[in-house]
Image 1 (cartoon, chains in turn orange, brown):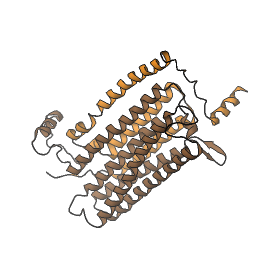
Image 2: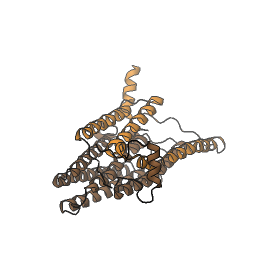
Image 3: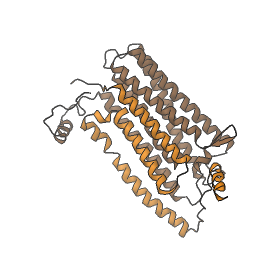
Length: 125
Length: 225
């Protein structure tokens, strides 16, 4: 069995390289523009998954591997997704017991960073 | 591009079942070193994800305010506080190092040893500068903002412990990668891999891209969240 190396045109690496820069810049922009709420979480997760996907598929050559390897490596992490959901449900419950039964006070929403405060003050006038 | 499937007539499920039921080689056409690196990275994925899930549990259960990331990690440049500046630079450095690593893999399969050597060395240097910046970041957090694993002046005391553990574990991976890259780069120019297809460069590349991959998640969850 010949062990073939992964050889691909260099152009695709440059393209992915550029895309990673662009996505990183956008996710940085999400923070800089101080987007909040669901839009913020959505954009952060989308850019994160896009970057992760391109790194695994192109830089780590998963796209061109034999299916036995793709399947063997990419299915076990699904267990981690299940773990994440289970722990999220559990944490929600733990938080509510701390607040409801242990009488802990819920902290106020943290103050926005200084550079955003100035912008908001400006808006009021 | 190489066609790695044995027969185009077989369906993907049939060929996979055949791969896994063969007594000898499961991952056909994949060098054993590469298969082992993938399995190691899979186990590493479990470790990092368990850390990140632990972080999620902490953040969801604390009743105190979590420190505001873009304030904690802000850098003051010429009197202006820029949020996440250092982290942005670190992110771009790591992406750049992933790019030079991909180039090295490409050069490796063309058997251009010195190109591989210099590209891998560049990757290692970028990785080392990443670790250097992380040291600077930790120094600032510990000495100037007095963040400790057991408490900090900004809010929830859990922040320090989980932050230092996860970024520290990632920094350790980057440091190990720098050593690994340097050793393999030197061995390549000394002709230790001349009898092979230079798949070692791709194996090192897998490890390095994985380090970048983990940073993508740390960047999103610790700095932007």
